[in-house]
Every structure is written in structure tokens, then in C-alpha cells.
Image (cartoon, rainbow, N blue to C red; front, side, top):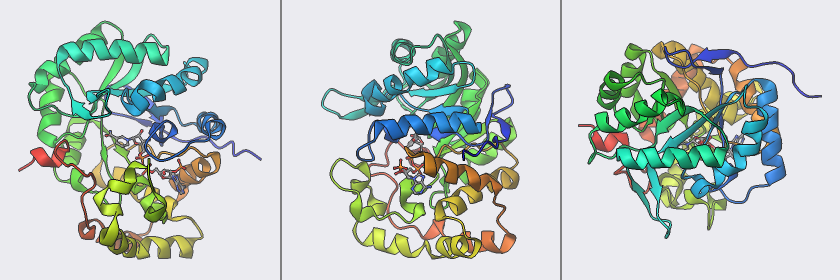
Length: 335
Ligand SMILES: NC(=O)c1ccc[n+]([C@@H]2O[C@H](COP(=O)([O-])OP(=O)(O)OC[C@H]3O[C@@H](n4cnc5c(N)ncnc54)[C@H](OP(=O)(O)O)[C@@H]3O)[C@@H](O)[C@H]2O)c1
């Protein structure tokens, strides 16, 4: 029987955007993590909405627009309930090469593409995907603020930024949410971004909260060929072996509680909201209804201080970078 319990709702930032306490990452439905069963992916979207997930995360670059097109029928059918969150600024060339553009002219043009592919008149949360240091941040946020004035976008977000960059952007236009990698394995954002978000009343949307699947106990050796994770330094060779050993406390806590490792990882992240006094809405990515239900059930787990203590030392011991090229990450711009 379907689980009819609804997720609690959370205010994402001080601007009035309210969403279900866990969102759904939709990237893998179109690209990056191997083949997708489309029927199961669509069933996952429906099951998520049914349970009170309202924020669905995509980007114009996922599948080069394909992910937004994939989501369009779902978003249009449930337009009043769905908070559609998409991103701009990470650019794919025809040859697949990735670059970054924060140019105001580019943003004005790109939003039209996202609106058209999604088949909506307004994007609920529009996030600057990557920072392009060649363009003053005030110019990019200024262009995005114009989109709010024009009614094309409701709320603004930033992704992979430093605390200082968030502060600067927030003086140009209120920022509802910042999106960054945050998990038991990746805690860089706790240095400057999290304190800035807490101070400014900006919500935090942790991406890759399951460490791209690694924190669930998945085997990186299976991530071959078209799976982008096969070239991520922390999932390859000796790093993968060492990092798997770091998961021992996650596995032990999961076993003792009779829950999954994914649930322990998400329960830890949900607890960050209390620790740092901010709103935290993780967006675990899955294409399978059963995993969606499992991930949502993590909200019902309260880890004890002892368990939190055992998980605390993990992140600082992780071997290998989280991307093959770290030049676009927030950390590369922090002293
Ligand atoms: N702003 C950015 O730069 C950025 C970067 C990366 C991602 N994102 C966003 O964040 C979302 C989530 O991140 P992510 O997808 O990279 O990583 P993630 O959520 O940490 O992990 C996703 C992986 O875990 C698997 N998984 C999910 N739930 C599971 C469970 N209960 N048990 C076992 N395996 C499970 C998924 O496989 P199945 O799908 O087969 O279940 C998938 O391979 C993305 O979808 C995207 O929207 C944003």
C-alpha cells in the first residue's frame, strides 16, 4: 500500500518560498549516471509529489536541455504544486565541452530556452549554476533580478559560491537558496557559505547528499563507460578503496538501527538544519520509487549524539577531489 504520510514543509529563505522538506534531484533521469528506465523515473516523480516533495531540481545543461524537456509534462500537469528549480550558467558546447558563462546577455537568452523546454510561463527558482569570475557578480544577479521583475522567474538562487559571493549577490537581489555539495563526505561549505546563509536567512539545498551514491554502499567499480563517476578522483583506484573503509560507521549505525546507509547519510544532513540554524532541503537524486520512499523516511530518523560523534571524523579523511577539475568550485576561489 502506498505511504500517504506527507512531508513537513520548510521555508526556503526569508522570501516566502515554501517547499517539502526533501526535494528530488532529477539530473540522473537524463544523463551522467548510466541508463534510465523512463517509466520508473516518471513513477518516481509522481510518487514524490504524492508524498509532499514539491521541489524538483534540474538545469538547462542536464542532457543539454533534455532533462527540462523530460520534466515538462509532469510540471505542466501539476503546475500549482510543483516548485520547478532550474539553473543557468554552465554551458555545454556542441562537442560536449563544458564552460561557464555569467554574461547578462547569455542569461537573458538562456532563460527563454528553459521556459520553452519546461513549457511554463515562470520558473520558480532560478539558480546561477557556476560562477564566472570574468563577469562582475552584480551584473549577473542584476540580469537575473530583471527576470524577476519581468515575471519570468520567482526566486533566485546560487550554486557553488563562497560566503562572500553570497553576501555580495544578496545586496543586489534577495537570494532564496544556495545549492552546494554537502554530505558526510563533503563539508567544505560549512567554512564560509553556511554561516553566511544562516546570517542572511538564505536556505541551503545540498546537492549530491548521498555522495553521488557512494554513501549508500554502492560499488564504484560498476560505474563504467558513460557514467561520469568513473572519472571522479574519489571514486577511482586506491582512493575508492580507502574511502569505502571510511563508510564503516555509516554501515554500523544503519545495521544497528535496521535502516539503510542512504537513510543515515540523509538523517545526518537533515540534522544540519538544527545545528546551523538554517533551512536545509536536500535533493537526493533517484529514478526509483522504492528508493524515493526510503530516502523520505530518513526524515523520521533522529541520530543520537553518540552516532553523530562517530560520523564526525569522516569528511576530513576522504581521499581525492570531488570533481576531476576543481577550477569551477567555490573552494577554488577561497583563500
Ligand atoms: N548544482 C550543482 O552543481 C549540482 C551538481 C550535481 C547534482 N546536482 C543536483 O543534485 C541532485 C542530487 O545529486 P546527485 O544525483 O549527483 O547525487 P546523490 O543524490 O548523492 O546520489 C544519486 C545516486 O544515488 C543513487 N541512490 C539514490 N537513492 C538511493 C538509495 N536509497 N539507495 C541506493 N542508491 C540510491 C541514485 O541511483 P538511482 O537514480 O538509480 O536510484 C544515484 O546513482 C541531482 O539530481 C541534481 O539535480 C546539482
